[in-house]
Image (cartoon, rainbow, N blue to C red):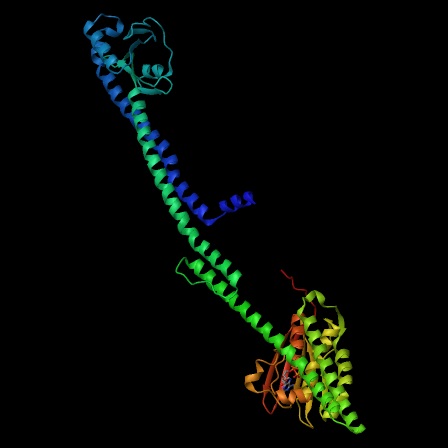
Length: 478
Ligand code: ADP
């Protein structure tokens, strides 16, 4: 649990923002400090080398004309070169054309031969410099040229660059102080950013906690980041939806209880009136028992419809899909409904444009067609008609159920697919409607990934259009 907490913390927005700020604060130091030190070093070496070479060249005439390079004694030059070498904490060498050291301010290596690349180049007329990082010395070599332009030797001057290293150390110590100050400021900034960025989310999480406990409130709308405001709005939308689902569930439960109680109340009244009266004629008993039987039928129908509806509410996995000949299915249903149509004096006409075989759940799809055709017969006038047509293209099949019956009032059209909704309550009850038929129809069509639409004009009739894919594709449930 503790481990999980620590991992979660590293993924939190507060930590990430703080981390980014610290990296941004420190990274320039880590990149800029070495670069600026390199630049300082290279500028110092180059400037010193240029100056040192110019100085070395300035001694050329004195050295060459006095024969100093050839071994002539010259105390003035001895002292001068010695003091110059000492002032640079370095060394001065004069090398003749045979690469032998003829003068050494250290007086240590006179007579020795030096074979060094730069000196060889200087013997050919080039002035060069080299910085030895290990010993920290700058070494320049320039040719010694006589008045005829012949190279008679080379002058080598060393200069200690300790001052540069000392400067770098001072620079480092300032940088270190700067780095500590900037790191401290960055950390303070990171802490503030951590608090600032995590606060809205923490608040939202706390509000959600209290919503979970009380289940009746909405998230408080607070001015914060746009993203947090958007999430708050979406959450409130979801909470609103949950409330309305809860309300509709409660309404459904109270509707169910009411619908189930109505036939029971009627039966109780009928039974009580028989029990309460004496010498009841047998005909009256029979009549009342027929009424009680009707109420039992009604109760059974409501329970059956409710069971169908509950089954529809389950996921598509409950569908038992097989290839079904829709033409035959409709023929079969119409044969079953024929007596009701004849009783109501309604003419039923079926027109099929082509043979249709589709992947449907036969039992559930039978309910769709039965409910639509039964309604078209029930909510019709004597002598009215019902037209059923079946068509298809390469993707869908289409069923149209049209009648010239009572029609549906405009303000009811949007509600007829709701459970227990009846456009005309008294008429619907009278003809045995439960208000569940179209809800069952719609759920069943939705399970088959289809659609149903209705057009109706009060007093003129109604048309229900159904469109269902020929091939059933199971939707993934996440
Ligand atoms: P019921 O069991 O009441 O028929 P339904 O869910 O099948 O329940 O229908 C809901 C309501 O829609 C009905 O009460 C009726 O008012 C209206 N309705 C359905 N089909 C038609 C139709 N073809 N013509 C007129 N009204 C209809």
